Image 1 (cartoon, one colour):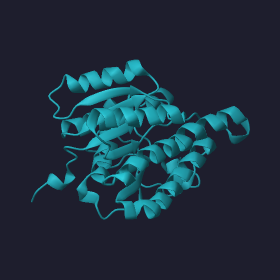
Image 2 (cartoon, helix red, strand yellow):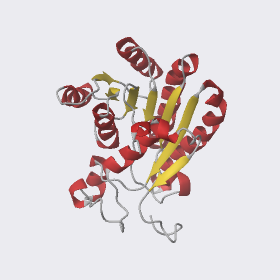
Image 3 (spheres, one colour):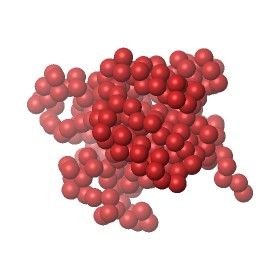
Length: 259
């Protein structure tokens, strides 16, 4: 049995929100497998650190760091331009950039609502449209969106985030129909709780506290989500189009009550 179909070697991937957590792990994973990666977030200093770490390692792929606020169309177009100039094109887009905070619906200000929707939904729109133009005019490509179980079944105190991620799920299905004839394959991942730095700050659970071999759990690792991202970006998932795959550990029995 061969495992070559699971490889992303030789591809060029833009991974948004890759200064830490799932995005950083995915960038490092792709580079180790031989992909060239564009590490991007709103902090140049943070993405420089990630890209330098990849380039100074034994990874087969190379990395560049580009500061980009996915809410700004000009910044996104500059990101794509830098990618094409450095690597000649873009084969994979991972829309991972996101943000949230917990609050009762009635306590969320209009500015707070717009901020979360802007990052999670409009950011996905900007990146998909800008990168999709190159993919559709070229040899196609793969887009992997990151949503959340909060967007597939709702979640208390995260109405703004859940609404934005639900839209990302719907956008995934729609784009998968519209762009299939251009050989652009679009899918989505909806994680549950993952031991990222953001979750650690809110819930006090560190990645070192999570045992990957333990089946009976509802907290995952960035590496486990990255495994799924790589699968969806690779030829191994060629017959998966327009799907949203939940990765959340043991299923919730009473989804209307338990988060």
